Image 1: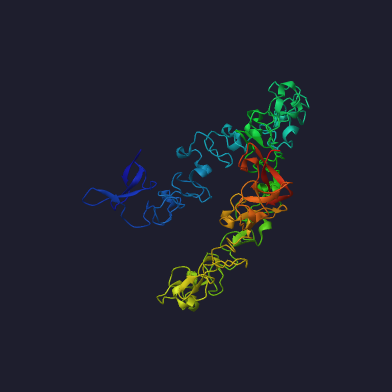
Image 2 (image 1 turned 90 degrees about the horizontal axis):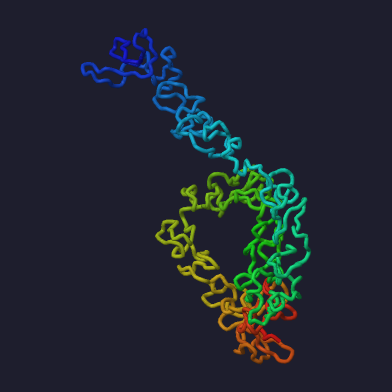
Amino acid sequence: MSVLTRHTGQGRWRWGWSGAAGGAVGILALAVIAGSGVVGCASGNPGDAGWCGDGFLQTSEGEECDDGNAVPGDGCSLDCVDETGVEADCANGLDDDQDGRVDCEDPGCATSPVCQSLVETSCVDSIDNDGDGAIDCDDSDCAADPYCYTGGETICDNGVDDDADGKVDCDDSDCDGRQCAAGGRQCQLGSCVCPTGQSAEVICGDGVDDDCDGLTDCIDPDCFSAPSCLGTENICDDGADNDGDGSADCLDADCAGAPCDAFGGLCAGGACVCPGGSSETLCADGVDNDCDGLADCQDPDCASSPSCVSTETNCTNGLDDDSDGLADCLDADCAGLSCDASGRVCAGGACSCPGGSSETLCTDGVDNDCDGLADCQDPDCASSPSCVSTETNCTNGVDDDGDGLADCADSDCNGTSCGSYGLICTGGLCQCPGGSTEICGNGVDDNCNGQADENCGGGPCTLPLSPSLECGSGNHCVPQPGVGSQGLCSSPTGIGGQYSYCTDSSSCADIYECVDDGTNLLCLQWCTGYLDCPDPINMNCYPLSPPVYIGTQEWGICYFWP
C-alpha cells in the first residue's frame, strides 16, 4: 500500500511504496518542518528527485512532462502527466488537449459521468451524447429529428420532396389516400382528384362537397335551382339580399363559409375574410394565400423568399437568399456590396472595411475605418490639427473645439446644417431659412417640417373618406382615373352632402363628389364598398366610368339601389 516513506537525508517526504528501493515514483513532495512535526510544502532544491513543477523532466521519477508550474489544463497536469491528446478535465471549460473541442464536446469525455445524458442531445455532432453506443441518427432518440427522418412524404400539398426520394406530393406513393388540396381532394394513383368522382354537386342537402370545389349544397352554383335551395342566400358577393330576409351576402347566415370575392375570400362572422390571412405565407404552393389576386412569387410578400430570387438579394441577413448554398459575403453575388451599416463591403468572401482599420483621413467626411465615426468624431483623429480648431459637428451638443460654444452658438457653424428638413445655423440658433409659413405650389418644404405644400390643396392624397388628414380641414381628396395614380387634394367652397344638387366638386363637402346620375348633378359620397355608405342596407357602392383609383384600390360612389 502507499505510505509516507522517507527517501532522503534532508527531511523530505514523498509518496512511495513501503519497502521500495530508494527511487519510488514521486508525484507529491511534502516536508516535515524541523522541530514542529507539521507537514508543509516541499523544501529542498529544484531538480531533486520527485520535484514536480520545477521545470526539470525526471522520467526516472515517473514524470511525463514538467512545465515549471502547477497549472492544470495547459498540457502538463498537476502531477506531471502529459495532457496532450487527452481532455484531462471534462468540466473545467478548457480545451485541455487543444483539439478544438471543450469538455463534453470532446469524444474523450464521452464516458465521463459529467457528460452523461439520458438522450442524444444533438443529432448532427458525431458524438454519442448519451453514451449508449449509438451516435446521431443511429440513436433512436433522433428518429423524429428532421435531419434523420426518412419516414415518407410528410405533407402532400407543399410542392416539396419531403423524404428526398425524388418524388413530390401525389407522385410519391406515400401520399396515396391523403389530402392534397382544399375541398377534400386526395392523392390517387399519382394524381390529386376528388374521391367521389363527381364533377358537380349532385345532392344539394347532404352537407357534403360532392365535387370537391369547396362549395357545399346550396352555396354551390350547381344547386341554385334545386328546390331545397330556393329561398336561401346563395350568391354571396353581389350585394343583394337574394332571399329577402333583410341580410345580404356575408351578413346572411346562409353564406357562412361561401366565397364572397373573386380571390378566395370566404364569409365568416358576417364579413368577407381571407382564410389564408393577410400575407402570402407560402411562396411555392400555387395558391393565393392572402386573397389579393397574386400567388406565390407574383405577390410582393414573397419578394425575399429564396424560391423567388435568383441572386443573393440581402448580404447582411445571414440567409442563403438564392438557395445556392452560400449566404451573404460567401456568395459571389455580394462581391462589392454593403454588408453592414458602417460602410463595410463584401470582398474575398468576408465583410471588410475598404478603408482599413483606422481613420486615415480626418477631413474627407468619410468613415474610413467603418467604426461609425468619421473624421474628427473618430478618436483616431484626436490629435489631428483639423480636429481641434473649429466646431466640427453642429448637432451633437458638444463643444468640439473647446472655445466654450457648442453647435449653432459657435460662429463656426453659421450656415451649417443643424437638423432635419433643411434647418441651418443662423444667428446662433438652429432655424428654418424659410420661416414657419409654407408657400403653396412651389414643391418646397418651406417651413422645414418634412412636408412640401401641405394643407395647400392640389397635393397628393390617399384618403378620400378622411381627407383632412392629408389635405387639411374641409378639403377634398379626389381619386383620379387610371390605376397607380394618387388622389389630388382640392379645396371646395360648398357644403353639399349626400344627394345635394351641385355644379362641380367645389359645391360638395369634403367626402363627396359631384356626379351626374343621368338626370341631375348630385353630391355623392366616396366609397370602396357598400359598408362605407351612410345607409349600407339600402345603398350600394357603384363604380364610376371611367373608373377611378388610388393605387390599385378602385373608388366608387354611394347610391340607393335602383
